[in-house]
Image 1 (spheres, one colour):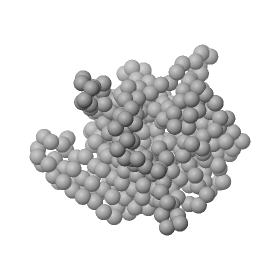
Image 2 (spheres, rainbow, N blue to C red):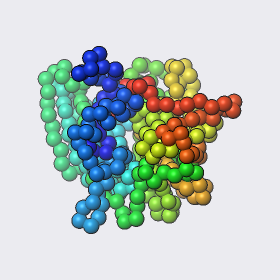
Image 3 (tube, rainbow, N blue to C red):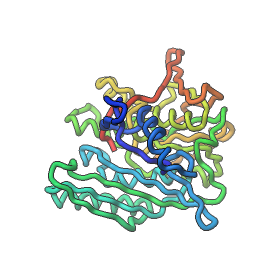
Image 4 (cartoon, rainbow, N blue to C red):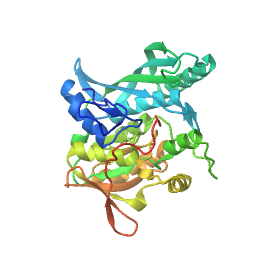
Length: 347
């Protein structure tokens, strides 16, 4: 199975032989679905990660694919086209690859305004140039009115992994430091604000951006990066749970160390959301050896995209797959996988 194979998050089936699908992304039920259905049907030699790293001609290529159904299609700080390019580039970067080529598939609903399509394509073109990648192939399908919510996108990407680079959950070790590249929860709140017509005192913009320059900076500085994961669907909490489960380790987070913008925190409090589970589209977590934690943090903070980077926790021997949070009052609580997702259709 492709290492980043995903499907809309299911809710508990009403009948053992059926799967009822709901909007959303990663979560406990999604993980169960992947393990019980897709892994059995599509065995793969690749690690379970944001992309598959495969040997080819004496070198290694990274391959990833993702689909984008965000609503609304335009939001503060980005749009579905820019999101599709950045999202695929970021999945490649999480494997340590240099992104090279992308494909783009468009599923269009009859009646979609041509000017809106041109706007999305222009945004994709601009983002691709910014990321130094080329969209080299694609496909377009038009379906009957009412069969698609305007426009869905699928993008796949290929990148080259340099010799000596090995970034995946299996390399995470007890004692590793856990870093985050910036404040969390911006993207989900930005999308929700437009979707629901919410007006905050301080407008929230999506953190939608390419993470490839940050990854390149870490590798060029000689940091021994054990694992990277972008904090997209399900947010920081889901990304950390996935790594802990795949690596067979435990994680301890410091609540006061996790950076959350004041406007995002206020919006989450008002809406009853936990910012740890709200999606980002320009943030990543990095697992690095303790002895290199300060050096890695300095590299991240020197880059504009990592100006708000912080050390938020450390890796423990166990319990395997468990993420716990040390609260500001000194207590502990589990940070578990949600059954679904707080906010649907955010990417």
